[in-house]
Length: 72
Image (tube, rainbow, N blue to C red; front, side, top):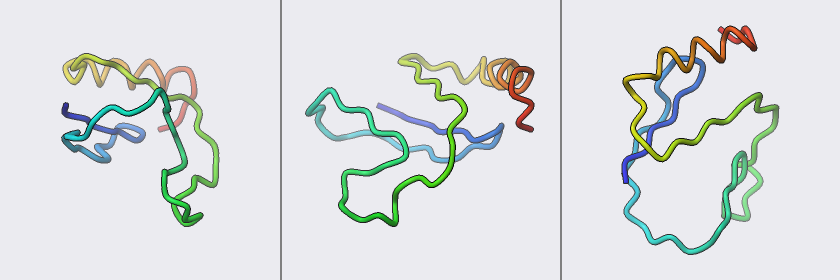
């Protein structure tokens, strides 16, 4: 139930999910609110979602991504 987000090698958000799974919807760059102030304006080069704790491999994963995209 723990989640972490990382952005170009930097820890973004870490949180614990305590809600209930309600649908098969994954939204990236948008929210379930009707406010346009939370919508993404830009581009996402790659998103990786893992259902296991890969924090020990995070540096290697980020290095591989950077080797391909040269983002940082």
